[in-house]
Image 1 (cartoon, each protein chain N blue to C red):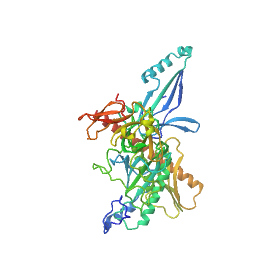
Image 2 (cartoon, rainbow over the protein chains, first blue to last red):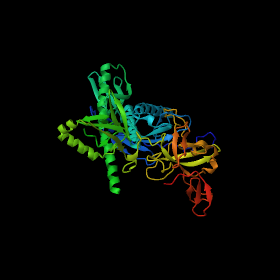
Image 3 (cartoon, one colour):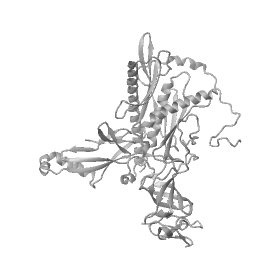
Image 4 (cartoon, each protein chain N blue to C red):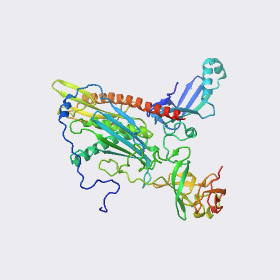
Length: 272
Length: 275
């Protein structure tokens, strides 16, 4: 073993070959059955406290997108004194069964990381944690990066990180929720899709926006739009509709986290 | 006005001051609650998921206050004649899953959620290293706040359902932050002048602490990046648990001597007053 090797990683043997799966012929037809939804989001499955040794964790599933997020911290840091906590976000794509295009997955990981970090940071009261750092690790268990909408993955990643932070009991100004939207433009006119499944086509605009909807619904904390010739009217439509979707997600989250708290409370009083 | 029973982060709980007839109620932020500015109004907002718990800060129970309130509404005239405004102060805490059912958070005066040591906190720490001028310790518990890390106790290499190995930190290309290393624990230093309050110049570190001792100490300052500064210069602070050179438990017999429970051998320590 070379001296310079990073010993913190558990490395596989050097001659490891990634698993290769046979292309499932039956599944190619099912991709076209995508139904065009308009103002609804896809059903979301969420669960908190899935990792026992993390400070907090969450699992989120929206159709093919499966994400797990764990939060570690606040942990002590070495080095100089800091008045507030450092926030570290790290994303990991599944490495098995993928082509060896490492550069590509690294850039996707970076995209996820930077968007989630931008969105999540304003929601956390970092000043309550001096001299420490909070680590957020997002693991993409499954996601179709080729044929599905990447903005929807970003929204899901932001949402799962928010849930894990709530689970960790880290002080939050507000829960950040994120939603993706797609404005389809063609000769027939414009149509808007919440939580799009397919990536945009040439004339479309797609975007993902993060909100803190607790008190003031117009608190945008993260934004990423792709598309050409975006008019101010388009922008308004996109932000307004993303806000509506983010509020829907927030309502769901509120319900679920309160329910999980009630369940735990019930458990605690039963065991007494 | 009714306060919410259960809250989620970001939810507004109450205004700072509320006036109802002759009763003025002031609400102060407690555990898991922060004061926030909403435009021109200040209000209390939740930072955790949990159950709202109201503690009266002027000694009256909440039930009494509700009764007073009802009377006020009924005998509005009477109280107007009296013309004596009552001021009541409450602290609002959030009971979350980490401290559910414990009475600790009632006595908690901490604003916010953090269990990290703050100036003025009493902490329990383990002595790890002695030098001639200071004692190095590792802070384990903050009194009335709980252990420092929620994951502590279940080590990184523990094997239980759902335990996931700790990922390599800040090493991947996907990381967007440039933060530095993770330290071993929350370190602290007790300097020689902070060991006891009297005859500070005669203190010898070797005769006050030994590695492995558990010390009850006061946080003097957040210190530098590496260490908190702690003090044991009070009667109720000092070594609370120690083993002798032979490894037997010892009990304190006076403020500077501990006795082995088996052999009766005496060793020097700066002891905390037991009761």
